[in-house]
Image (tube, rainbow, N blue to C red; front, side):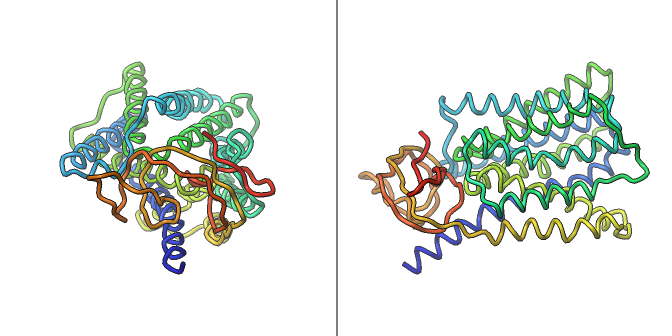
Length: 370
């Protein structure tokens, strides 16, 4: 029993670390992209960052397949394609277009504040449309991280004001929140593949926009630096974000990822040797409080698992994968992926809205969506 509980605790910690690593990489990209921004225009830079993420992840996937490590993740099935297409259209196509159009008619200071609502939009959509359970502790964590982001991006000398186009910035946040939730529905599949598709689509869109604006690609050195930066801060970050969602759900992963601007600001203090300002010092305890609320969450109650058949990366020592491998297949505790069946069961243990615990919260939990 102690070993099973220890394995379960490690399984709950891994997605948290993935979400924080995703935030760290994405946040680190902000000051580094700022350095590149002196040599590359905004739209070509966005195109190269996204293309670097997609191309780099495809290369990683190719290497993994060549060395026989591809079977550790489940491949994209035909049933997953509508989810992937909708997520890519929402977050990789519609959201950037809506944001770009809106920014032309929205005060910069107002836009900076409104962009902090992606995490909140993710949480609301997760609870309302996708029936993800969010307790009071999680809502408070989302509020803290959102408020911390607003404090951090508050531009006192900037011009705040309402413009109808400002609703477009909010709409872009909602579309990214929708992207997160749609991606959560297929987060059990290979996160590298999912992130690569998003990167290539978003990069292709930015490339088309660049040509329409008659802007040019930078010199070879700056272009290569942008591609490499995109692979780490966009591609690897998105892949880690998707993997975190399979263990935490969309709302909690989104809240942890929303600390990225704070991480970016902290790294900017080092890169540009700036003294921490009042905004940074005010945002620090609020952000830390939000992350601590999520890290200290303990959700346990009797719940029921209905029969479920699916495919995803898993281990045999986590208390939920007790199936037996067929003749000639190796039964191992190492992580691997194959289609398997969960028989009906009812038990109680600490859990998050992972791929096995997306049940309702009635008298005895609920059943998994099919």
